[in-house]
Image (cartoon, rainbow, N blue to C red):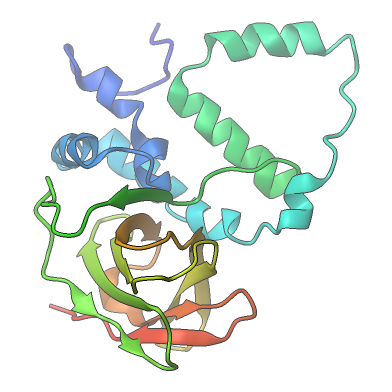
Length: 234
């Protein structure tokens, strides 16, 4: 019996890669790990189906507010806790991520990282082959320049956000990425916080296929757009 519940996996390192699906969608893999998983994803139908199911989680978790995160967790009956601890100890990393995400969406009482924020020096080369960045157009004067790298996937679109901050910019400004389909319906793809000086790389994902994304905006928490871009559809 397969303890991870992965169907159709092959012997060797493949079962371990099948446990990276949620980490991939939530953007918690390193560039090297993401490249390895995408090579595996190309020929693994089980992972393709799993990633498709999870693709909407970043946008769903992005709907959580700070107030939601700070709420006290519901009281757990003492008779249930020992059993839950035993089950949790046996779960692999993929199960833990999916379980945490489900609780966040249903009860709005836990926090999860929607996107990964990596502070990198300017000019650092990327380890993953990505398309040419698409520069976002500033809509109002601001301290941040942004370019996007969007990769069409079977489950949606993988997005890398390259941010460059002006010298002397204070850290701690909140931004969010929002995608719009052709009908103008928004999809929140998560948020991040600016860093002082240099630049940062943010990774996230959308359940929309690249051809279905009509526009992408960087917005302030109030919903005011500050940068905009129209994806290049092949």
